[in-house]
Length: 432
Image (tube, rainbow, N blue to C red; front, side, top):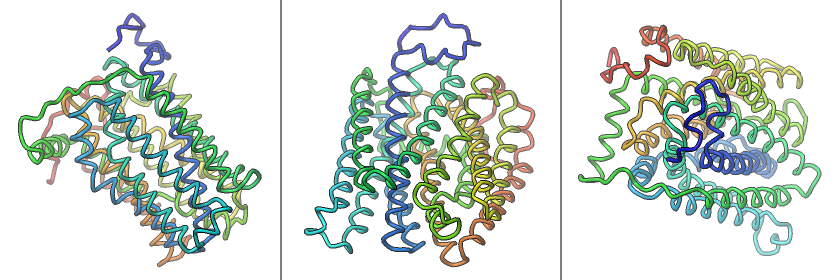
C-alpha cells in the first residue's frame, strides 16, 4: 500500500482522498454507478412502456439476482485467489458488451431485423449477463477498497465511497429520465451509458495491481465453507446482513417507480428521473453531513434508528398521492438508507480479516448486494397480486417488524462504540 498521506491526522476529513489508488477507485465507482443507475432507470421505464406489466418489472430484478446470488460465493473465492485489477478490467469489458447489445436492439433502425417481441427477452438476457458480472464485481472492489487506504481510515473512506456512489445515483437516474424524454429516448441514454462505462474502464486500468493474498491449500468447497462459517459465527456481522436483507427485500420500492410515474402520479419519464433522484439526493446530502458528523459513535443503535426511519418513509410513500410529498418521503428514505450503508459497510470491513475479504464480501453480496434485485422481484409480484399501494404498505410494515425483532435480539450491541467493535466475540447468535 502507498505510504502517501500516512502522516495525515485521523481528524482529517479528506484523509482517504490523499491516497492515489483510492482516488482512482472512487472515480471508477462513480462513473460505473452513474452508468449502471441510468441504465436501470431507463430499462425499467422502457420495458414497462412496452409491456404495461408489473410482472415484467419483477423479472428485471430476478434476471439479475439469479446469477448474482448463484455465483456470489464462487466470485468471492476467485476474488481472493487472483489479481484484482485484471479481474475488474474483464468485468467491465463484459458489462460494456452487455450494454452495447442492449443499445443495438433498441435502435429504431434495427426494428427491420428484430421484431418488437424479441426486444424484451434479449434485454433480460443481457441483464442476466450483468448479474454474472456482479457476482465477481462486488468481492473484487471490496478487496481493492480495503487495500487502497490504511485500516484506520476505513470509516473516512466508507463515507467518501458511499457519498460518491450516492451522487452518481442522483445524476444517473436524473440524466436518464431527461435524456429519455428530450434527447433520443432509450438509444440516446445508451450512448451516455457506454461513454461513462468507457471512462470507468480507463480509471480501472490506471489502478496498480493487487496480487492475491490467499493461496488455497484445500478444495474450493472447504475454502468457501470457511468464509460462510466466519460470517455466520460473527454475531454483529450476520445480524447487520440479515437486517438489511429483510428490510430491503420487503421495503424496496424502486421497481414500482415506473408504475407510480405512469399510472398513479402521471409524471412521465422525467418525473421518474426526479423520483429516482430524490432518494439519492437525500442519501448524498446526508453523506456530506456524515463526513463531519459520524454516525459511528454508537453504530448499532444508530443502525436500528436508520432502518426504522427507512421503514416509516416507505409507508409514507405508499400513502402519498402528491408528487411533492412523494419526493419528500423518497428523500427521507435515501437519507436513512445512507446512514445504514455507512455503518454496515464499516462494520463488515472492520470485522473481516484480510485473507478472507473476497469470500466474506461474497456472502455479504448474497445478503445485501442482491437484496435490491430480489426485493424488486418481490415488489413486482406483490403488486401484481395485492395491488401497487397495498404491496408498498405491506413492505413498509414488514420492515418495521424486522427492526423490532432485531432490537430485542441484539440489545447487547446498543452501547458499543466503534472502538469496541474488534472486541465483539465471534460466536453463535442468541437463539440460534
